[in-house]
Image 1 (cartoon, rainbow, N blue to C red):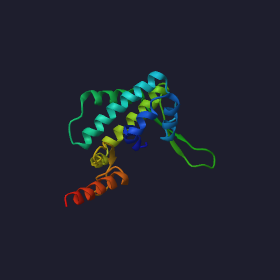
Image 2: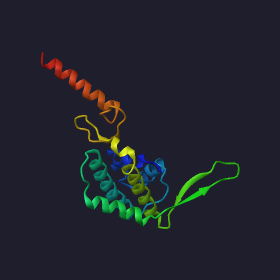
Image 3: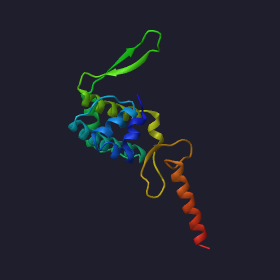
Image 4: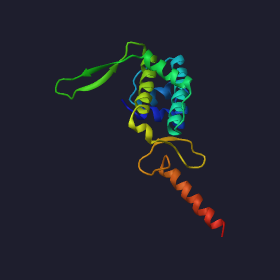
Length: 169
């Protein structure tokens, strides 16, 4: 399972991508999730996105998550009960895929929910951070002493710090 799906879903860029069917379809496929969402399913995915973000922010802040977010996540995961299947084409490499008995909406929502569950129940949960740059609230997985979601945010912080030092002189 693509653990980063949950983080990418919470990225501000995903909000506009999930606003309409065509962009949502492209965004989901780019993240390895194949399936067509109905209009209702797309609205449910945006609601699940909010629940996942609340849970990830609670993990990053080392706080108790809202019970409603946890209930929403678990409900979507349960609705898309999945079983592992193996595809092994002649002369090819065996690949795993998930089969869900529910409809396409349940399949897509379940993939997002499982991604968040896997991330939140793994050791990576302790690496979840909120970007330390002023005005940026992105979630990311920290490595080492990293405090910013991207080099651009880190550069903005360093430039601001440098400018503040020279203004004080």
